[in-house]
Image 1: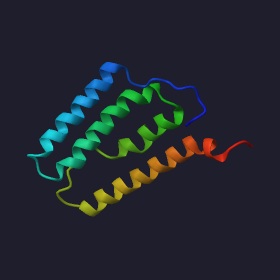
Image 2: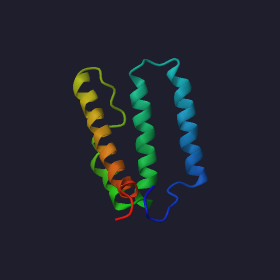
Image 3: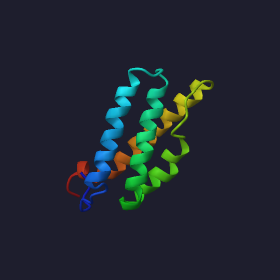
Image 4: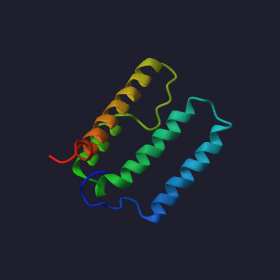
Length: 111
C-alpha cells in the first residue's frame, strides 16, 4: 500500500451510483452485442475517473488525464479492431506502470 495517508475519493452516493451502473451494465450485456462490453467498462472507468481525479494524488490524476482520456468511452470498434485492442493494451501497460510506481516503495522494504 502507498505510504501516503488514505483519502476517500468517493463518497457513498458516488460509489452507489457507480455500483448501480456496473450492475445494470452487466444486465444489459445479456442482450447486447459483445462489442458493447468494452464500451460499458470504459464508460464506467471514465465515470470513476471523473470522480476521483480531483481528489487523487498528482500521479493518479495525471494517469486519468494523460492516459485514460486518450481512449474514448463510447468507442465501439466496427473497423480498426486491431488498433483499438492495441490502445487498450497500452492503457493496461500504463496502468500497470502507475500501480507499480505507487506501491513500489512498500515492496522495497527498509532502506
